[in-house]
Length: 350
Figure 1 (cartoon, rainbow, N blue to C red):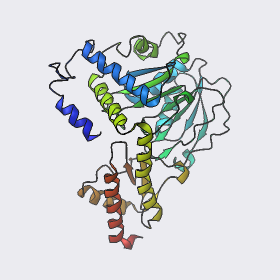
Figure 2 (figure 1 turned 45 degrees about the horizontal axis):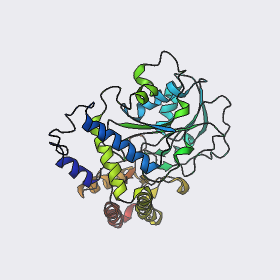
Figure 3 (figure 1 turned 180 degrees about the horizontal axis):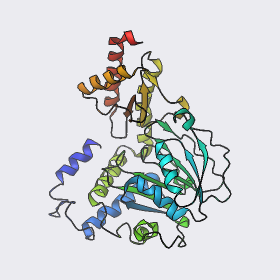
Figure 4 (figure 1 turned 45 degrees about the vertical axis):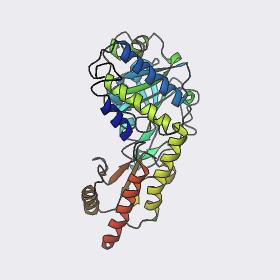
């Protein structure tokens, strides 16, 4: 989270803009929160240049809830194509199988998701309602630089860990969604951006009311009590990004931060990146030494220097540096400086 946002939220904790209430305690049906919600949507629309033909929803349940909601609402022909490039896409595909036929049209599981498959000429199923991807793979450090050729089928993308990290063309997607807790705000909010024509009424009658996108669209994200404080923070982050110069400036800054770390990894004799260069993520940089004991030593010593959360996901091990929007360049510089020092002091392991 940007420190500026946290400091502003702290100042408003007990009294939001003279309302006499904290956002945590005000009515979600009141005029004050209505302004917060509408402003957040307007600012997100401005950042992503979202056309009026797309609906924006602030929901609960995290991105994992969307693994079920997507097929429940969009799998009209009971068939969809999934591109599996990591654990989250794999889980989404498994969930979708409960609601229809799932075709895995591409996968990188054969090499532990360390690359992205060629998606320029996939065998897209004739009856598929959509093609699904996880655009940035947090655990494995990969990112789609070019979107798959879906041959006219709507593209559904989980963008949880690259949300607002760069400019995108929303019209290339049928739907985007993402949990807020990586790049946008606190956990508890998921944002969905859905092309309106995909939201036909004829979904299965047994789909619960709360799991229908149209329920939330018709109620402007207020069908039930929303994650009000989380939405408030998301709105603050949208404003913060605008102050930084918008997404063009944010993308440039993220590219510069990532380059610092990747350039060092490419020159290092101790540390090695784990992802094919053309598929590297700007948000999640994964690397190893090739020796699990040295990896553990590095993580422990880094923690002692105030460099936190560098341990890789339990499913892959190694190290992972997540350098989301709010991470300043100075944080990446500090990590690289420590890595150089650690490498010099551990030459025996090279």
